Length: 400
Image (cartoon, rainbow, N blue to C red; front, side, top):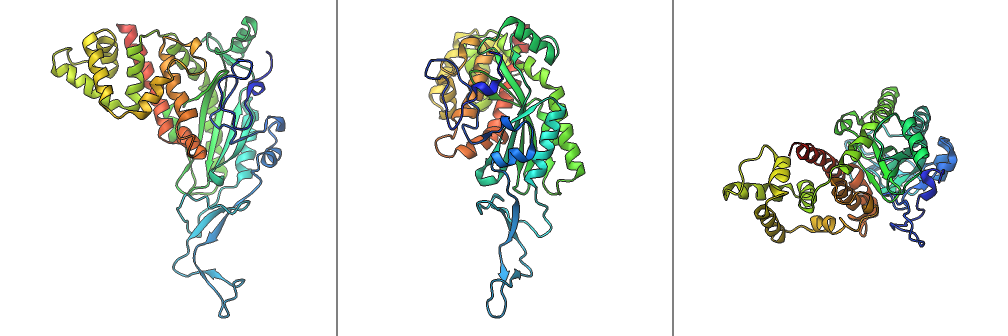
C-alpha cells in the first residue's frame, strides 16, 4: 500500500469504478486520452516522445497567389487576405478552433511549455504523471502530482505532516487522495493557458479549482511564450502549490457536514438549475409558507430542510421541469464510486456533481470535447460553484 496513486491509475479508456475483484480503481477524467509518462521522471524530451507531443504548430496561408505558370512551388500569401490556419505538423489537423490568424501571430511551442512545466514541477516537489494532446492538438494537457497521498480525515498540519499521519494510521480506500496541478495550453487564438489544481480519491477523480481568481492569472496567447509568460506560469504553479492545503480542508469541510436528502438535492439543483431553486423559494414566499430568507443557502437550511410543504413544492417543480443533467446527477448520488465514505453529507452531493461532469457528461459523443468542457468550460464552472455553494450551506447549517 506504500505505492503512489499511479499504481491504481487505469490505463487505456477504462471507465470503471471497480476492478474484476471488486476493488476500487483509479479512473481519471481523461479516460485514456493522455499518456502515462510517470516513468519519464520530469524529463521534458522523454515526455514529448512518449506522449507524442514532439510536433510543432505551424501557420498555413488560407489564400495564395501562384506564379504565372501556376507553379505551386512559387506561391506567396495573397496581398490583402493574409490569414493563416494553425496546423498540427504531425497529423495536418487544423487546431485553431476555426479562427484564422494574421502573419504576426506568435505560435506556442510544445517543448517550451513541457520544459518549464517539468522544471516547475521539480521545484515544487511534483512529478509529471500524464501528458498528451486533446482535440487533434488544439490543447496540450500536462498533469503533475505531489508524491504520496492525503488523508481526508485529517485536516491539521503541513503536507509532510499529513503524509506521516496517513502512513501512521494506514491507508483507507476512499479517504486517501492524490493531488497536483493540471496545465492546459491552447494553440487556439484567444484561448489561455490555465493552471488548475485537482484532488483525486482512490475511488474516483473529482477535479476542482483552488480559487476562482486563478482564472485572472491565465496566460494570453496573443504574445509569444516569452520570459514574462514563463514567470506567470511559475507564479501560477507556486500559488496552486501554496494553496493546496486549503483545497483539502474545503473538501473535508463538506465531508464533515451531515445533511438530509432534501439539502443534497438542493445543493445539486442550486448549481445545475439555480433558476428552479429560485422559483421554489419565490413561490414559498408568495404562499406565505416562509418569510424572505437572507440568501439561497439560508432558504435551503432553514426552510427546505425541515418543512414538508417546501419539500413537496420542490418535488412538484422538479417533476414539471426539463432536467436531464439534474436527473443524471441525482440518480448517481447513491451509486457513485466512494459514496460509502461520504454518505449523508454535503460531500456526497458535491462529488456527484463533479463525477458527472468529469466522467459522464458528453462522453459518448465526443470524449475530447467532454474533457475540455470539464476542465475549462461550463462543466468546470459548475464544479467550482458546487464547492462554493456547498461551503455556504455548511456555514448556514452551523448557524441553524
